[in-house]
Image (tube, rainbow, N blue to C red):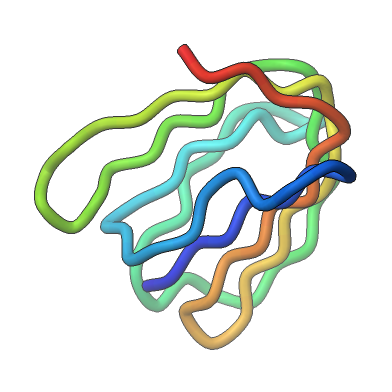
Length: 83
């Protein structure tokens, strides 16, 4: 699946991933290949990405939104800090 993370300032991440774990406002959840379409608000917390090659990347976000449709995940975040 393909992930794009955008902040108001710039594109933070773009690429193929195996999974994305996000801090949903109702609790943390993970998006995997062929996940059902979803739109959710995000609260402050950690976004964990597992890239296709097995590399793990984490970011701290202050909130935002996530959308998944047709194996494309978009994260729109207010601010981000890479760990």
